[in-house]
Amino acid sequence: MHAVVLGVAADDILVDLRSQRARGRMPRASPALKSIDACPFAPELLDGALSEFEAIGSRTLAELVRGEAAVRRVPLVERIPRRRHLTEREAELARRVASGKTNAEIASLLGLSPKTVGHHLSNILSKCGVRSRVDVATLCKGQKTTAKSATVTDTLSSKGGSFCIPAFGGFGGTIFSPSASPSIKPKVTSSTTNYNKKMPPLGTGTALSYLQLSTSGAVQFGTKSPAGGGLTSKSIKAGQTYTAFGQASAFGLTQKFTPCYTVAGKGSGGGSIGGIGSLPKKQDVPVPAKGFIEIYPGKQASAKC
Image (cartoon, rainbow, N blue to C red; front, side):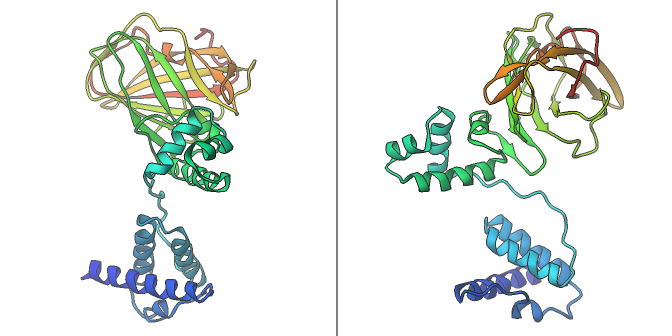
């Protein structure tokens, strides 16, 4: 019964707000909402309506509901906005942007106006949770982005190689890692804050970037880490020193990796911190585990990456 009430309320609010928008009005308190003033489920009704509008991608209507809630002093449940998938046109534009094409070049290739290309690019940045066209080039294939983090599933090969760092908060790139025996497909999550309060503070001060790697089985890492790759960002300054910390956790037990420092070089769209993939070198993780890599400014270790 409650679910039905939520759905009906959302439909009523949707129709009412659309009607008022069509008349050029920006309502502070819609009649549909006035009718539920005395209802004990009013906060839940507003929150349910907001969820439905966000689910269909209607930012304008979602903002109107937030405005109604603010006027009525109704607290809404804190939520992470859902990531909407790129349309076919947006995906095509994203590929063009990633290849280095300008808006004018993309417009000419696809028969669009530069203004339309700019509009699509704005949608791409919003949906993917990145800040600039430079960041689009760092998006990982299959990446999923929320307001607080970005996640992708990649492969660590028994022959060694690299995995993609999900682009988030202006950070992205590729990590070259030692061989993994057996090959595994870890879920990699990047963020710029300890948003879930589950990442241990491994260094001193505030980390610039956090990476979480979840494995589904035991893994043993090789003794050599190939050169190349790096964490890139405009926030990383070439010539400055940074320290990488790592740790694996499982069943309440922790296994710390030897931290290492490195001097950032120049990368695409800013500075680049290389050598991060050397952290798990020679490590034997005997059970499924969650790994953490955190990057801190300054030299906080004696070993070089």
